[in-house]
Amino acid sequence: MTAFTANNDRVAVVTGAAGGLGTAFALRLAAAGHTLVLTDVAACDALAARIEAEGRRAIALPCDLSDPADVARFAASVLERVGKVDVLVNNAAFMPMAPLSAISASLWRQIMTVNVDAPFLLAQAFSTGMIERGWGRIVNLASSTVWGPPPGMSAYASSKMAVIGLTRALASELGSHGITVNAISPGLTRHPGSAANLPPEAFEAVRARQFIPRTEEPDDLTGALAFLVSDDARFVTGQVMNVDGGGFGF
Image (tube, rainbow, N blue to C red; front, side, top):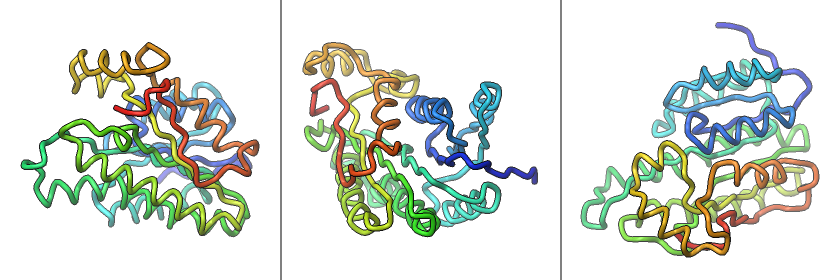
């Protein structure tokens, strides 16, 4: 195994880093000086190489967030190879669309495992070191679907409302230790994954309901993340930041 030791910079873990939002988040954090740990079920090696080529430090470690045992293995590997985690961005999500009648118990459980259990387990694993150092940032990804869920999103919207509850609860428990916990709630965002799975009419319908009448892009969310993980946000915790062009709904 190649040795990888973090320098004195803050170390950020980004889940779902191979996707459109995760990649944008990772690049923004790298530009701000963070050392990156990138994880996804898909390979993140090219993104890590890109960040390294731009003069920052990054490592790609795969993890299957639907498997709690693999989440535990990943967390242990991160601490072994990097030594600490200062910023945790729980970006990865599983978002199948299915009518209520088609959601099996196993599908429901998979959605909850990826979207709720994994963020909890990672926060549990990395917050211990944050408490010891008296500083930490945890940012979860909620969704505008919780405010106006469309048909076929009952399980996903439920999982994201659970993320909001988790955000509030962790903020309460960790606030006295110098750790803030917040959530970003994006609207429908166009990236290669969403564009491949949703028809153009879906983006147009959402765009038409927004106060800012254009489709959201991943870079529209990176400023919110940069603020929430910064020292400027030291008194902001337990909050859900809606970054959806004023849409406040799917």
